[in-house]
Image (tube, rainbow, N blue to C red; front, side, top):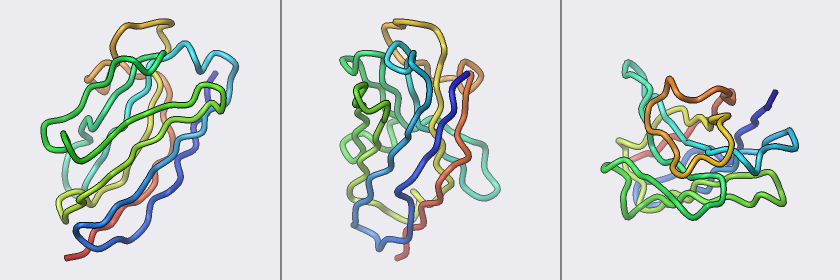
Length: 127
């Protein structure tokens, strides 16, 4: 069982930055891929970024490439999402998730492949 707690959300002006954190419980965190997803009001939840167990492989949605960076610190059981050049369209509830297949080479993009989810942290970007 893995429990995830997101933090770091808030209100920011367009063009600003935020860093989200996802703290995980469980000794096997370092063997799992992780992903960040978001859900805006009235929209489906969508993939934002993913990182494999070692941190070597990362994947991004086209809408955030070049602006967002996903990383992880396995010693701290924590993953991060650095978000720069934020715009109004980035406003959403952001979730982190863990895919519990050990040593997967790449993080999956599909929501259904993730096994554990956090409660989410709200990011609001004002114009």
